[in-house]
Image (cartoon, rainbow, N blue to C red; front, side):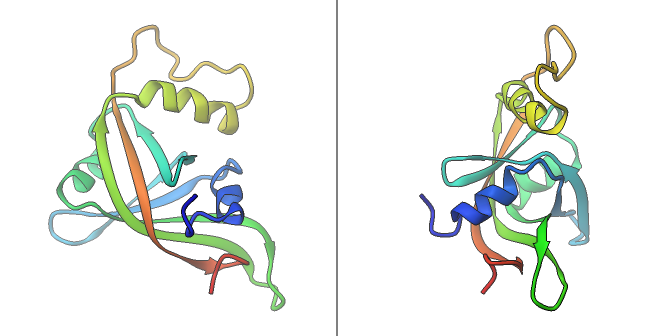
Length: 140
């Protein structure tokens, strides 16, 4: 198990809260998307049915940041949140099965997603964390 993906970090990532994914546009400006997130081994994963802007950005520049709100607050009353910085690897294929797995968390048990008979192969983004921060027991 990755020393960065502690049990506490994994609990936040798999709790069913939306991730705010930040990628870099070709001009260097930030691009933000809300994404479903999960864990696969020592990586955080997202799935995308097409090469949307975030996917194109990561294919060009793999630097990525992700923030997720979390349960609880610190001794000062600040709400917990997780920030992950890392590098992303984009692979062709596998989006539909990953989206189906994440839909069970985000939409509920038994839901079918994507709701089409023959979905595109899409893309899976695998984020390898290089830094963990935010407010919570995972932050140093």
